[in-house]
Length: 168
Image: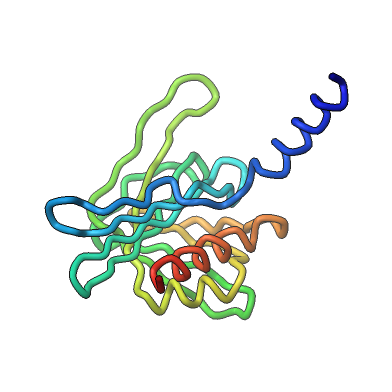
């Protein structure tokens, strides 16, 4: 019994950060395909996931950042997020619209959930390189968030997974 419990704990720990698709579905009316990856923790207080929508020959790519780091702010339609990659190149995502935040209870405080549009070339770069840092704009200011080394490759894994699924 003890060994079974120990194996279960080890297995749970190994699979807890496994990347997978939370949604992989096709709309029965439009035949549009939607892929949404699982969340990855970029830093304590900041998570992310990727989403794609494919309809006819068009595919749209999005990254959603959510959490409380950096400080939650309202972002406008022209706001951006910049990802600094391990080769010092950058990928820029643009807000999908005006987006706000929720005021939470307890230790969570203000929580944002902001979605940014990416290009296919951006997803390909994210699939090849780790993210070292993120610059997130909100209003007339920005905040830089350095990603801990152990988490820098997590978006790369998600982007590879998305590209592999779309190539099927």
